[in-house]
Image (tube, rainbow, N blue to C red):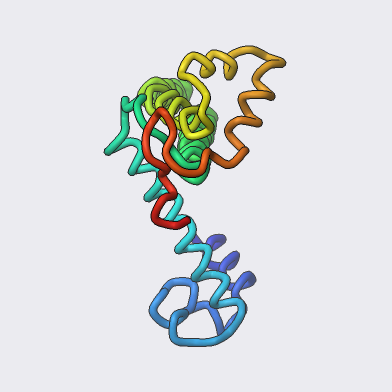
Length: 172
């Protein structure tokens, strides 16, 4: 615990330490470091909102369209959660093999639970670019998966297409 306090003390400086722990004070002050800290906090919360939207509202929904932001924010959070569980599992495995084994099992269950929404958001992202559902198979092929990655990066069709209305219709 003392190392964590020392890290924040060095990171923020002696006079700015209270700003890391209280977000209200950051909002009222006009220092660039404080604003950056506030934005990072908001961005992590915003990313998690997209992840929860996919998991709660579109868990196994293969119909419709998904924006790039929805796909990439979900993917980022999914990999961050899996990585965090693995890191905890590795640390616990160094302490006791059985604890590490339990957390590796938890990571496996988390991966199994998240594969359905990952495939669903990938299919809906393909629909946004006007591609059919079967092209999700491209993500499993070694060299051809670069084309799938390209499809995930490009902007979706503007306006309605055969898979539904434009998810960015309110913003355009």
